[in-house]
Image (cartoon, rainbow, N blue to C red):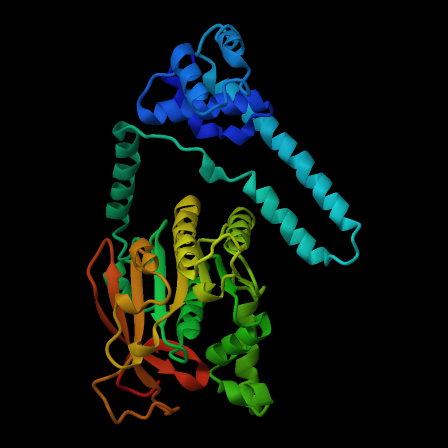
Length: 423
C-alpha cells in the first residue's frame, strides 16, 4: 500500500485493522486508511505525520520501521494474494481463540450445552461472513446475464417471473415473490398474519414443490402442524384439537398428512432467536436443502444481542440484516410485522408499521392486512363463508400497488382467494 496507493481500496475489501497480529502493523494500517479516506496519498512522510499527530508513531515502530516496510515486497502486483494470506491467518487465530474459549466453557456444568453450541455457531459465523468482501462489476459483465434472463422469460411466456404466493390477484401485481427482495406482511394481532404466511408457504411447498423455510418465533412446530392439518383437511381447528372429528374427516386428515409428509417445508420453531441465528440457519438451509424462500414470524420477536441501547436502532439493524440476507442468498425473504394499535381505527398505511421506519424503507414489498370496512354488519365469526379481508399492497418497489380481496376461513385458520360463493 505504501508502494502503490491504488492497492489500498482492494486490500480494504479483505482486511480490517484487527486482522493484523502485530500491533505495529495494526496501527500503521489504521493510519493508512485514515489518510486514504481524507484523500491523501500515504507515503513515508504523510504516514509518519499522521501517526505523530495521533501520538502513535512510537507504538507503530517509528520512522525506521515504516521505511523498512517499503522494502518488504518487490512490488504491489501480489497485493490481493498477500491480503488473503493475512486474512487466512487472522481467521486461523480466531478459530484457535474461539475453540479455546468454547472448550473452557464446556467444562462449566452451569452452562447449558445447547446455549454453548449456539454461542459457538454465532462466533464462527461472525468470522466467516461472506458479505465482508466486496467487488465492483463492469456493465459489460452484467448486460449478458440480464439479456439471457429476458430471453428466457420471453421464450417461456411465464405469467409470473418470481415465486407465486398462491393468491392470483396478488401475484398479478407483484409477478410473484422476486429473488433478493424483502417482503413485509403487516397486521394487527388476531388479523391472521401467521395464517396468511403459512398459507403462502404451503402453496409454495405443496403446489410448486419448492423448498421453503419457515421461522416460527411465536408458535411451536406442533401448533403449526395442527393448523396445517386443519387447513389441508378442511376440519375445524377446534374440533381437530379435541379429537371430535368423524370417520370420513379422519380419512381427509390422513390424505392431508400424505400431502404434508412429502412437502419440502422446513420449520424452525426455536424461541429467542437473534438475527445472527436466523442468518446462520438460513444459510445452512440454503446450502443443505436449497430453500428458495424464507418466512419469518415475526420481526418483533427476534431477540436482541444486547448491542443496541434503543429498540428503534435494533429493529433498524434487523431490517437491514434481513434485506442483506435476501440479497446474499438471492431468494425472497418474507417477514411479518405488527402494526400500531391505532391502525384498527382507520385503513392502515406504511406509517403504521411498528417500532422502526427503516422496515418501510428497506422493504421491496409491503402488504397490510385490513378488515373489510365496507361491510359494517359482516359477521366476523361466520364459519360458513369466512371473513372478507383486504390485503393492501402498500408498497411495490418494482410494480403497481393495489388492494386484493381475500377470504379468511377463521375456523380453518386459512386464507383463500375471495369469492362470493361458499367455499
